[in-house]
Amino acid sequence: MVLVLALALIGALPVALAALAESASPFAGSTSTAAFPPPDVTATLYDSYFPDESQVGFPGATPTGAEPEAIATAPAASLNFDTYPVIVPSSQYTTSGPAFNPMYHWGNLGPWYSVGGAFGLPNTSPQIPDGCELEQVHLLFRHGARYPTAGEAPSVLAAALHKVAQTTGFTASGPLEFLNTWTYTLGQELLTPFGREQPFQLGVGFRVKYGRLLDKFTSIPVFRTTSMDMRSVQIEWWLRCKSNFAAGFFGIPQYLTSYHEEIIIEATGYNNTLAPYDTCTDSNNGVGGTIGDYASGNWTQIYLKKTTERLQQYLTGFTLTPDYVYAMQALCSYETVSLGYSQFCGLFTEEEWRGFEYSIDLSFWYGQGPGNPNAAARGVGYVQELLARLTKTPLTTFDTTLNSTLDGNSITFPLDQPIYADATHDVVIATIITALNFTSMAAGGPLPWDHIPVDHTYHVQHFAAYASNLVGQVVSCPASTDSIKETFIRFLLNDGAVPLTGIAHCEAENEDGLCPLANFIEGLKERVAEIDFDYDCYGNYTIPTPDTIVNGRMI
Ligand SMILES: *[C@@H]1O[C@H](CO)[C@@H](O)[C@H](O)[C@H]1NC(C)=O
Ligand SMILES: *[C@@H]1O[C@H](CO)[C@@H](O)[C@H](O)[C@H]1NC(C)=O
Ligand SMILES: *[C@@H]1O[C@H](CO)[C@@H](O)[C@H](O)[C@H]1NC(C)=O
Ligand SMILES: *[C@@H]1O[C@H](CO)[C@@H](O)[C@H](O)[C@H]1NC(C)=O
Ligand SMILES: *[C@@H]1O[C@H](CO)[C@@H](O)[C@H](O)[C@H]1NC(C)=O
Image 1 (tube, rainbow, N blue to C red):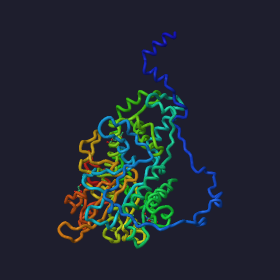
Image 2 (cartoon, rainbow, N blue to C red; image 1 turned 60 degrees about the horizontal axis):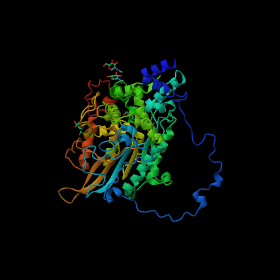
Image 3 (cartoon, rainbow, N blue to C red; image 1 turned 180 degrees about the vertical axis):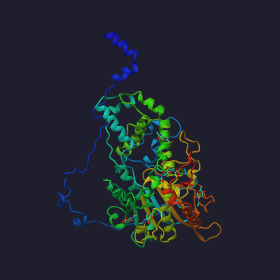
Image 4 (cartoon, helix red, strand yellow; image 1 turned 90 degrees about the vertical axis):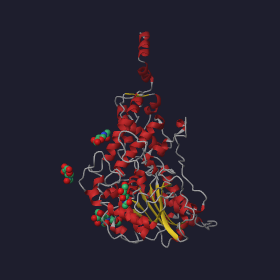
């Protein structure tokens, strides 16, 4: 009897090995959450034992130093490749060529980093070009790393695994063995600890680079952000998001009194240039709101087909699909930026990470970018605000996503600031750079749904990663022909200079990305005029098949 069994084992070796592997615990895939401080703790209980600094006194010397302006005075630009303290899961990819870092292929789900010449201008740096002086800076940035949003793939996979673990059971072995005891420990929507650090660090960096512009302020700065949808319990996320940047920029506790934070309501039906989808109906419906998901969904079935088969070998009792495997890739990034490390990262090859990256590129190109019929319309409100700030001209027409109450008032929308700072979302940066006609990113043309093109120019991790930042530098430089100073503007997106050659009157190539400010303003006004907000956001149109749009407008 024993002998027969042994023979049977040899005959079906892989199955037998799987059978020897440990089965999943009933808690596998379950969700665990915790709250700190514990809800029943009274934070004020011992306050009298811990007097604050005004009560303690003895503050020591307090003179502050002059404002720094490293962007103009340092011999070289400081760049950001720092992901401390989360672990870069790259060691396994170093067999040939430069080390492959999957973290730089997570699209909007990875941390921002300096992208160098990614947009086509490799011979410049964030440093103010020689002979130029900094006049003004416009910052638009994304919040730091967050937990998944409601209903995202990772929690769907966890729930499915948990259901099976509690009923018929599953068995994971080999590289998937950890799934037997894996639980889902991510929160929802909130910034992760690393995600709180990112905007703080951005704020400190911004002070060191641009602090001297504070000397030119004649009033308290207004920086802007969005509330979250009021129905969401996570409004706190945004309060923290704003203060992390400001806390870094102004210091703690000075940030509490150093500026006004304007929190623009983000909810359906409210006008908000930093959350424009709320007033652009066609970005949320079948007319123009589904094509991004379709494109990325179709590609996922293709690039993860073989991967799904490969990983299925290590799992019995649970049937994998490309969507579940996609959730594992997303879990690698979410767990890394939340917990500092993820066992899911080691499951995938370099090629599979490039596939993941491309799925996000497709989702943004067709959903939020050049291939979407209302992306430019969604971004145009911020562009109108930018024009108002650059020309110091009050806004008087409110027929896009502008809010006349806020944008039409010089207290809530000042026009005399040397520094502007607005906080927003990944998808909003994507629509704004489409409205700005940054055409170098669209140079490769429409993205195919079934393969990664060789001339691929649209990489989401270059502009919408966590804490991504778009910086408009207004500088005055000696004009090329004589010694009269002329004003120029250029844009750095995650430290990479963007060619402005797609904007009328800025066509002349400039290796630093500079365009004379007057020309830029003229070109941008033409761009605003060519965007038909009403039609693109409210029209009943059909996107061409295949989708050949490259300019973010329904033509
Ligand atoms: C405009 O902003 C004000 C101030 O937050 C708000 O009360 C008003 O409801 C907003 N209007 C729209 C249409 O968003
Ligand atoms: C693939 O695209 C079609 C539209 O062309 C869509 O109906 C379908 O749902 C997409 N498939 C996936 C898996 O997203
Ligand atoms: C909000 O936007 C709509 C559409 O552009 C516009 O008709 C309306 O006047 C705006 N409301 C405010 C308060 O600006
Ligand atoms: C924006 O870019 C498109 C090319 O995609 C071009 O046809 C159009 O003229 C540009 N608009 C302006 C105002 O420069
Ligand atoms: C939009 O147009 C399609 C046909 O092109 C039609 O079936 C649909 O009813 C229209 N929707 C609305 C809201 O008018």
